[in-house]
Length: 122
Image (cartoon, rainbow, N blue to C red):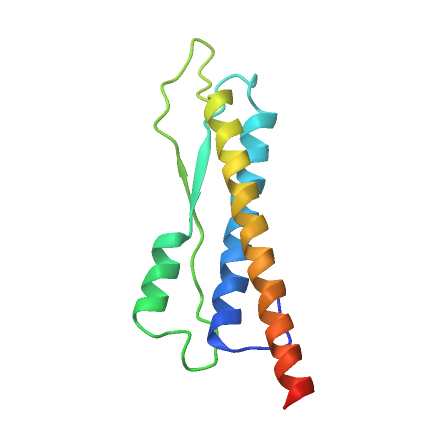
């Protein structure tokens, strides 16, 4: 996702939106394969690298760093058909990621409203 305003806060929000979006895709894939024999569910982590980039000041220079989105197999026990998708866990993860996405989009909206207000009153 690319924004016209490219300050550090906007870059962090954009990177977080990309990470949550990737997580939602992986969760949807897991749910879609709940009955597929030998399918192994995966999970997404981007927060670790995002936090590291924030901590080391990578966003401060005006160029968004490359924050990796890692996908790893889950450790959910495997069922009789070799599938380890836990529909209850995936559903909860889907709801949680939807809330995260809503919070982030609200933060982006608030950020742009702040920039707009500053531009029209400045």
